Length: 171
Image (cartoon, rainbow, N blue to C red; front, side, top):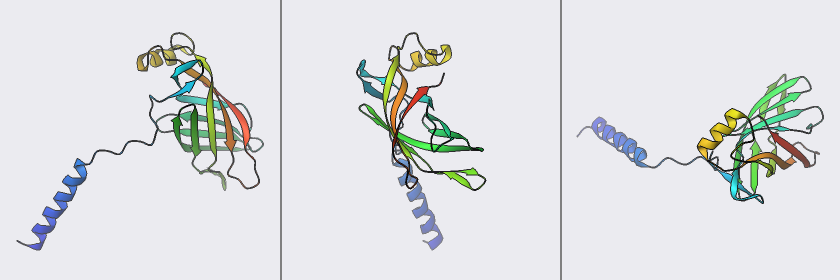
């Protein structure tokens, strides 16, 4: 048997072996994930987009989306930054890690993090936007949706201290 034929067989075997391995699941970014809240001990949906009420690092406003591919946008001070984030949920807590992202003009947003808990509920059967509520009913009928988040924002920039922020669900 020639060396070329042996290499082809070995390569084909590797492809088959890796094809048989089950796919690695996404890191805790399950769109059906829920967190426990006192008004809904069975859990409540929290995925979606939020607007942070407070300014960060002075003039900057932030919105973020807890979706399968999480993202955030920061505007203010003459810049707009669009970055990615990773999140995980366990019990009552949602942990969010922002990826460092370039904003252009020689500036970047740091790889900060947040630890959040849900506040306020939209009942699964009536409140919220018409389209958003219809989608929520199909995904998980009669399950409430988190209206806001209370978070501790942990800056990664030297000399900055953690701060309390609130985030409201965007409609």
